[in-house]
Image 1 (cartoon, rainbow over the protein chains, first blue to last red):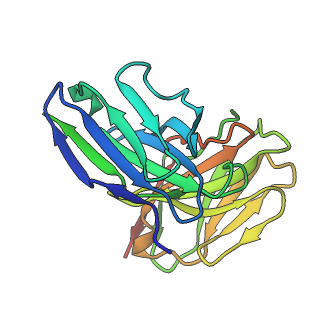
Image 2: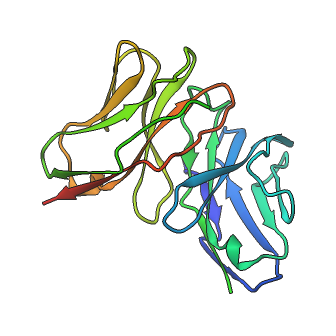
Length: 115
Length: 109
């Protein structure tokens, strides 16, 4: 059973470009979470999605950031008009049901560098 | 969300047991206690979780105080590969994990 797959592993974008980060959850998992980790800092929750629904986006910046988890295909975290402060590692996690009592399985992240 | 308090760092020698403490005095009755660890340049990895009773798995043991206001993650024999940041997290009804700063464990040969 493949783990959570994130791609690309590394992404370089110039200021003003768009970044698209993809996350394929583990087979059978319908809950996806996105986290951001700035250098030398802890993980910050961004958004929690179930298939076709955003459940909690309280950690996501109101502008330029969006996330989706369509019925078919991977979850996508999209950052429009990237700025240098967006440079970070973005981690995706999945679980078979709501997280309470159910462990999250994390991918190895996408490291975004904005030049 | 209930908060946890962990030491910033701990050290251990290889082959020795490691006890990583976590205080969570404001834990609610339905909060699970989760432990994750993060190795350098990797995503967090689930270690163990429990509600009231002590738990054991192939990676570690979790000892939960009777009043549930503290817990201890036990690595029975530390290896160099156990060097990581260990996060103690309470999982309430909000369905998201809130990571703190964790404990950075160093393991010496």
